[in-house]
Image 1: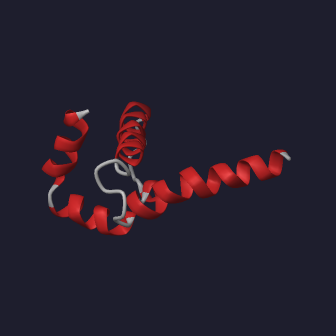
Image 2: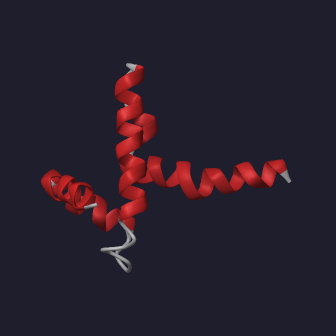
Length: 78
């Protein structure tokens, strides 16, 4: 049961954060910076399904990589 819980967490949360935003490849080692980046990534994952319900996450990643201001506008809108 516990193993199943953590497998679900890995698939639903960590894998998406790493696959989309490359969280594991981050070279930052400052705890405050890591916490802030994780908070932003989590906020975006929570907010993206509402305005972009049928858009795959990799497509949104490319969109926001090309225009980081669009991601910030999405965060400010909430």
